[in-house]
Image 1 (spheres, rainbow, N blue to C red):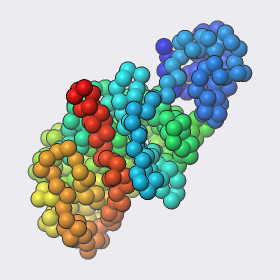
Image 2 (cartoon, rainbow, N blue to C red; image 1 turned 90 degrees about the vertical axis):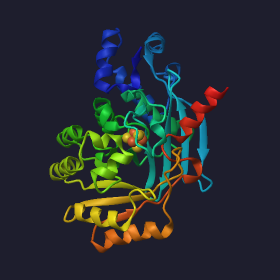
Image 3 (tube, protein in one colour; image 1 turned 180 degrees about the vertical axis):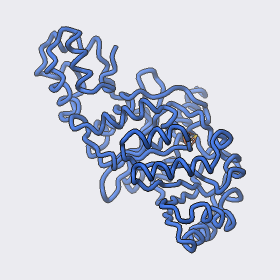
Image 4 (cartoon, helix red, strand yellow; image 1 turned 90 degrees about the horizontal axis):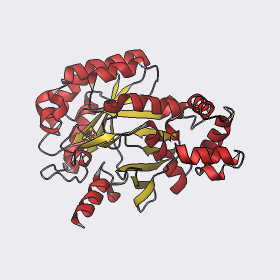
Length: 346
Ligand code: SF4
């Protein structure tokens, strides 16, 4: 079976021709899928019956089922646990902002990076998602929740830059006029700092927003909570981020999760300020959510404010992330882990 949702219209034309169908059917099919939200081949009435039968037998157009759904009481966040065609599950989150809906997508099933504060990695890495499985997450929200889409963030389960080719092809596909027609400026990607791929991304000619999970002002602290720090050193990550800005003109955001007694002291804020002095960047501070990792504790309000104030005193641009969905287990991977645990306890 071919994966229909991974294909561009041009690729589909070629495939249709190989199968003895008229290439112009590709534009009708794209219209059905992306404009009319019709995802059953038999409902595509403009296609001859014999074409529909071939497509039903040979082209997968799978929109994942919802295994579970959590709606925040304020209606701002909806989280879906979606079942893929091979029974693996991924989480996808919709956040309603003043400017429109943003969807946070997963790029892998599980994750090999194994950050201490993240539930996604607890059951290890399973596999990369295909281009079509990323597209299908967007279509699932269209189908089950809300058709409006303003932006996407690749910040769900998985390290996007370790699924580089599919992630790039996915962003290129949803940028196209005949699919979602989403601007690159409405796409963000968060990486734990896969340095060579950050350079590749800079060269890819797609001015998306790049976010780097920093979470520490030095490698000693970073290694305690992010094993990937053994592989890529902080100065190299900063150099790659600067290069990304130089090439794309897009300011890089550094994500910084505050964890009590690990990385949120005033001294850490001072060190971070020195590291970022004079750079055109943004620090996004996020107090840690409840996680499945014992021993990682959210700092108190005063400590959080001191950290932010210290950065501001050094004129470092900083935002304190508004926490959406904390009441619905929004920390990445928590819903899937709960599901896996309930499966194994049956
Ligand atoms: S935070 Fe991201 S990179 Fe780190 S383990 Fe979780 S999904 Fe992987």
